[in-house]
Image (cartoon, rainbow, N blue to C red):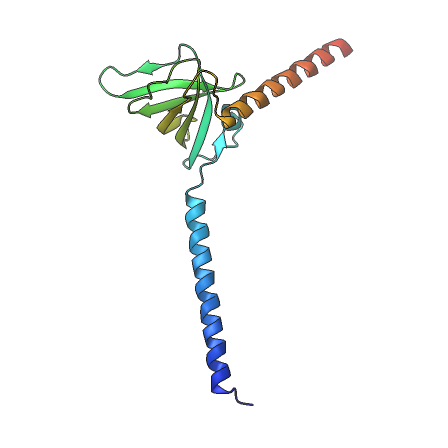
Length: 160
């Protein structure tokens, strides 16, 4: 049984449109997946949950006394902590005016194979009371984890 030419043309048009829409959706999803910057706390990075050599966001508090500036360039190193684990951060550029030790930051960059976060952008909070939501959550999670560990240790000591 032969297909009527009108029907065949409609079928080919519909199949062509579906293929075109499929290609467009695939390209959009691929582009979006390349631009996603997931947030990781220092504890997540220390536990190996953060991917290496992939662009991510990291945040926490800048550890007091950890800031080291190069004398001959704009290179700086500092430590970001969630008070459970620390991560070394290397950055080359001008730090924000509001950047200080003991303050919350969010940095964007890549975690290298040595565990050093190579930041290409550093964002500091804009007033004394504001804390980025991701940093607040990471600090709360780390605090809860520390309390759980302390409770487990004290329970083990009392049962011995």
